[in-house]
Amino acid sequence: MFSLDSQLERDTVSVAALPLCELLLMNDSNYPWLILVPRQASIHELIDLSDHDQRQYQLESNMISRLLQSQFKADKLNIAALGNVVSQLHIHHIARFYNDQAWPKPVWGVLPPLPYAAAELTEALTLILSGLNSQTLVAFDWQQG
Image (tube, rainbow, N blue to C red):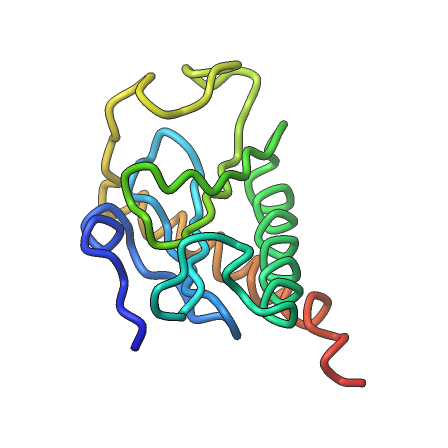
């Protein structure tokens, strides 16, 4: 049975349930930072997913990547599945900007996380959900035949 790792639960805000993955927002307003977590037990690597689920993950990742580009106007996307601290498979999708404080370095360890204020969180979730609604039909057309 699937359950979200407690560290992910503490560090994120739940956004939506996609066909395969839970979509989470990292509670760090320094960067628009989404995380996809396949809703399957004991999955640690992408290769642990079935071929079908790997294709579904790729569709969802592409959708989230397009969302970050369109809604947040990212200069660059950082997409990574590290798992060194949290072994449950979770894939980071981070919108990066040439003028962000960590650029061009990776985001980890450069700045302390800055939790969203209530109004900022509402704004970020509104952008994400409106982008998700506009992307979903395009991303999942293949399922219609």
